[in-house]
Image (cartoon, rainbow, N blue to C red):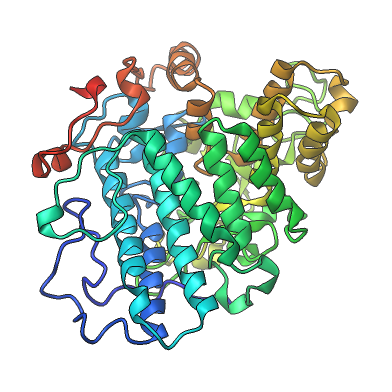
Length: 519
């Protein structure tokens, strides 16, 4: 049975990272300082609030008819297309977002809400004396993990942002931006110093599913270093994850993305959700009854990226059947996409439901007909922030980009991912003796087909310097040119390489200055 980790959602504004701006304000509704921070249970409530931010639709959730956080960013890439501009992947993907955009503002506000809650716990946990040193160190490490996660997301999207490491009073409210490099240095040193205080994954009780472990700490550090081009450090910490000798690839890729199987040894850090409990269900895994989810649109070039089961591109393989694209295809194709001839709830999908791009999303989507009468934005499915396959591919890239790699090790990592789905080994199809550029092409392919619609493609393209080339130029030349029903995307350089500071923050904080690109 799933542990309801986040069910102690705040009953007051105790840890209020506000919705209006990023500061932690005093609130007349707050629990009194004189009565709180007395027992370990108070600390549990506080850390639960830190986790709860992650469930928001501007973070690791999305809903059918509302906002979309990180799961929605694939629709701002060459993986997908969003028709709704109020979703994160809509306006941003189409290049029409502004400093007042819903997604731009929402991600900023929720990130700082999470940072504020972590800061509040870190500033007050010393007041609680009836807990062990080990328990205290663990709570501190969890709060620092979550703070580092938020700050990494902020610097990857917005670049230079205010660095706030303690609760602020109104008199201290006006905080200027700090350089990205300063924030990166702070969060990596802070988390590295705390990560060993997290429990080993093997020691985590099943009742605490979803709490941060040492493996998650190593994974986040590897992720931070990789996305900031610090490849030797990324290789170091991804190796630490593997050296725990705990995590295993779940044997069935398709079943991995069904909520009944979400508690398994591939998952390193999930954001947990539970249907029917105080709004804690997920929306990115929503179902649509007998109809496929046809308002989010995977793109044709993503479908074409999945190889045939002989390891060849569909244009080079005799196994390709244009009338049944999933036939003889990499099994991840049919797990990820609904295409012409696909079955949905045991019936062939009408092509009219695939009209815009010819594809619909299957990954994450709840197909179980027993649940069609329930709220489609209230599902059980957890979101996998880190799973073992992510770390394996992160390590392969880090090794190659660091420049000091053994080809057999890199290919072994890629083949580990391919073996799970029964795809041929790289060397059995393409040989060996690859250049660094060719190895990166192989890794890029594997990352895309393995992790589509898991909120990673946008950051991959940014890291590789390919966001404009793939998400806009290629989209316009290939997807939109062949399908005028899609909107032409815009990309203004250098403006769209960084997200703007939200207008609401500029209006309330005179010390905060808009990025030069957005002035």
